[in-house]
Image 1 (cartoon, rainbow, N blue to C red):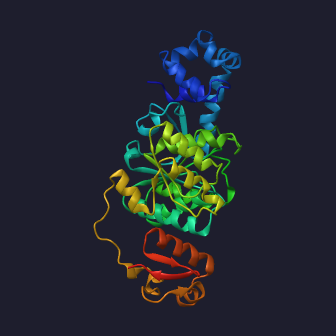
Image 2: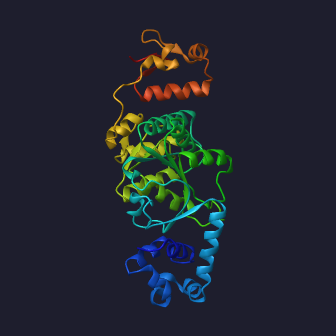
Image 3: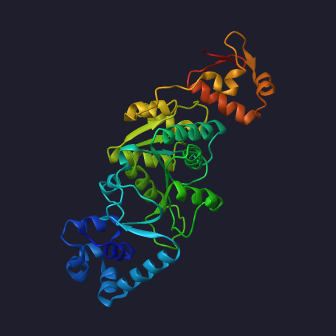
Length: 351
């Protein structure tokens, strides 16, 4: 067992990184390694050895603890009881997590990551939020990265249900990114946690996000990708999940939509197809209330008929919805097999 202070000291050192920390863990007590850094110079590196020998490393850790406390941020070490158990088992778990909110070490079996494109479609945003809302209402913890687009929708959906959600940052806790999600982050703290492995003051740089993505995947039992381009951070999260033995699921998209190219490829590679939260729950064995919602409860379904196709303009007039929201809702209902699209952009109720 390593003290949180020793782990923080190690995390702040230049050189070893999380893999170096994992290597040191296999050599005995961390306290002994920090006290005799020359014996582990092959892992620590010359700069880290010098900082440890001079006492500067300890002073840096003390100052970091003080700054974190002044900001209302808790530093949680890998060996503390509330450090997420599932995350602790990945190849290179963060030595420490900076945390606002509450951790739950045992939530791994019900944690689901929902990630996707920043520049998502209205349909993707609506579906991502709906999946998160339903899963959270059934007791799952929704994990995502607080980014624009699908991540934001996922956190909002969990909050809509009054459920638990965790946001993992690619920056320090005092450098929130994107800044427009500050109010969302504060709401998440009340119902879950905002966390980061990066020291205070760390900016959101591109090479930080793959590290952030491995935490998202490692925190979760499954990763659901709602939309992703051919090259994207969401795909990076999915591939990391595969490496860690987690389930990967994806929402299919139209082949002509660039933001769906990555998700369609995941499905070809064997990801579980997701049409809605029910598919995720069934795959993971989550308990779902037996009483299904009535179709008529959806106002859009209420203006659709099975025997009379309606155009977009007719549906817009009947529902009062603006076109982007209308298209998003129709796409969601199509995925649930509750609406059929006919030639000529006509729609009918399927049941």
